[in-house]
Length: 459
Image (cartoon, rainbow, N blue to C red; front, side, top):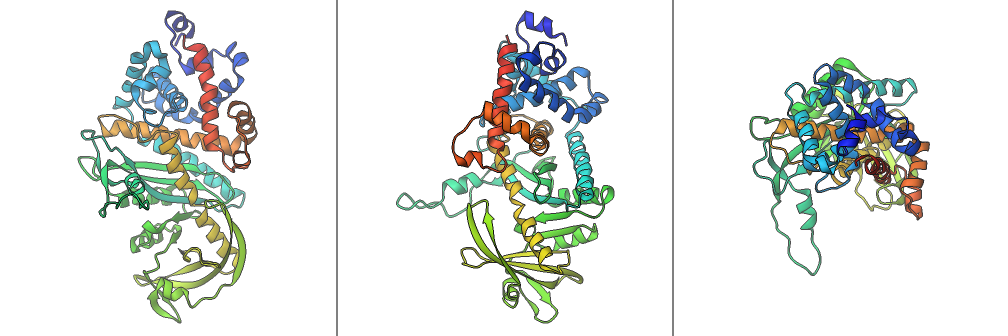
């Protein structure tokens, strides 16, 4: 790509070319060059794989699309190809940029599995690093939905329960009576797995979008089975899988035991468990028999309050798998503001330290809820308007890469982030100064940094 030629003939802006022609560029915008360089380093292994599959121009478009999504901060049209085309080639040549992106996404020479393999390889490397420094890797699982309320004919759409509709029809005293039945809209299912550890920021291990209708029909349990099989084959033991109540069932225990993976799942109070002395009872009835063994005060990051909680544990078995010994951890709020927390794990609990580790490991699961929220608000993951499901998965895979890149910046470049926030996204007030992971401010700062380069070089 001849950057000087395009600059003279109408104002093309190609971020890959800007990075290569850095003689005068670095003097004008050191922060922009830093970001473009870090993006190039982050994507180096992936672009090497794409070089063997795609034309060089499409590989450059992949890099430029990555930067354009970071630049275009708009929830409703953030992933609209015609909008992104303007940020790649300048607004005077937006149709040309849109065509470049379309050619990349429509290419049959690559699929979204290329991105999945790249993220999994990075996760495998990080798991080895965490084990070396003595930290237990946590793989956090959860499901969400991408809602496409106004879409009808896009390939792959299926019926999903609308969390937005549930929130908007919540009882508001003095206004109206909300509908009784649940609200379903067109959309996609979304299964995500994040890799983290206590005291660490998360990174993306796997993000998969699937549907229950049409030729791309899939089942969520198949996705979990394939990820577990891949983990068992390439990593083995040493990872703790953290799951919420939606996974509290017999097949979770069966599959994780079959693949020799440790798990920690929030158990439902009405499910049956077996204790050697107490017999078979519902979980909440069984838990009453075990008194607290330790207490301490913890800070609830979600509710911003300090709580006094107690912990107890017992050795139990599942009725369907009586040969497998499990541990039930009971966490109680001493002031009874919240119902007790029942955590079932395959790890044998022998002391207070291990019990608290399980408690804090589950609390760390909140990071995946934050990732869903961030992707929907700041990365506009609900805004794509593509005809074909495979192309949509490719675009959403790039969004997953961007979220992982931002987490990579937080993990490895904390000092630079503080300088960037101070200069490019200054805020007053203790709430913004004391936030643990200022990813929303970081997103704004990156937009402002890249916008300067776009304005100076787009003609």
